[in-house]
Length: 428
Length: 208
Image 1 (tube, chains in turn cyan, yellow):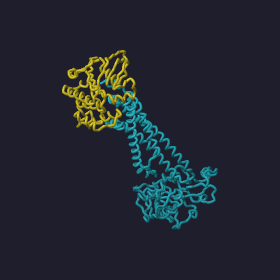
Image 2: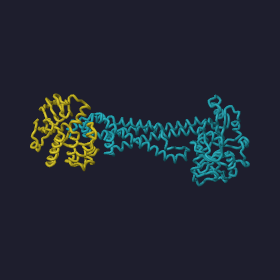
Image 3: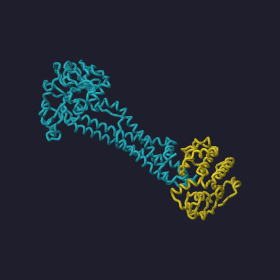
Image 4: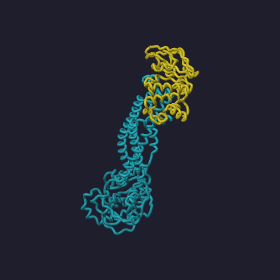
């Protein structure tokens, strides 16, 4: 029967007294852990998806929308651009541009977006094939790990695409007639590639050629501009630059040769002021998004702070009231040979036990919430939440929890250690 | 075994209490008698080192309590002094058995299971070992308090009105137990009381 067990028994003897403290404490720890984890994981995914891309070029509109649509595959495209407008970017002798990846977006398969692009994009995002080959011919697709897993796709499967970016289950969707064939499946990469269906840019032109009339009837599906609607012959793999300059794609991802050069810094402004194109710096746009995140977090932070203070107060009050009930016990312990230090420790440990249990429950709470979020958030925001990842910050949080437990218990503990045996025991 | 001389205590209000000298042998039982307000409990507290006397000294087993302070005094008390109060107090979250084990540990001794089991058996509490103390009857509580007071084989046992809350039968039983248990460990037993039922049983008496 050591002091720790006695503290434990004291707490569990009247569990309701400690329950409120434990719950409040768990709530505050849970919220802090949740905020930290979501923040950390969001940052990481933003960074993973930056993929060394220095610039996104698309049709005039909102630079944030262009970035979100082209890099994170959220929201709608700003419009289309003609191949002729962007020919210069493909020039290997371009003084600033090292490499480009063209994107055509607008269609989807069961809520997963189909992206017309070139296989180089896999290298940019660090994604690897787990089986099959890359797409070469039109209507060949490589699907991301999640797309394959959720829809049970395997090599050789065929499916039809949906016109527009629509969620699964939408009754009004239009199916394109042509079949896509799965030729490859990606290994999980922790990037947006996990959630995409990849095809050639030319596939987009084909799947929309016969669809022009139908699309006109469905203007209520607003916001999904399509890459090109002209007819072309069935394609052997050809470079986009050999295609008709009037054909359209959605946007262009650009990597610079030297991102810190003076020319590179001025490049977006030059494009925006002198051409019909929109150039957006994704790092800048994302930092804007983060700023929004941060101000939201600050408000939540104040709330969490308030809950933490209330929970510390509740531990303090619970211990303090229990002291009044237990003063005989404490005096008794003194007559049995316990020094003042022991009584001090006894109460401190009760505070610490509340803190530790509250901490464990809080961590459980936050990771439980993340497990639930993981299912919901992914579809809407292409944002993967992992419930099983623990941060070093959560270790620090444990130290902070112990400190708060100690702080809340220290005044009652001092009070306990000052118990006057004679006064208390005579007072019966 | 227990002696005191020239003890006095000044209450903060200015009231001064002076106490007769005591000199008790090992194994002796003595009653401390006095009207209420005569300072019986205060004397007990001075003798047990729970209060600091204004003048005089208390010597238990050759140790002058004035020479001890703080933790050393707490420890000495745990090992050499057993205390029984008018109403029995326990660590309420613990069972009877655990209360006795705690008494051994707080006195700095190892938990002696057979000693605890044996003592509870002697005091007819064997079947209550795993009960919370709050579940015991008043008589059982007082017996458990006696068990706790003698568990560490103290040199001195102080009992403050141990029978005032008990009926005649329980009073008889408790006094007999106290005496026999004190004798078993050869301890000095000092009983503060104004209970007339005891004066007929115990001849050694000191009047305040």
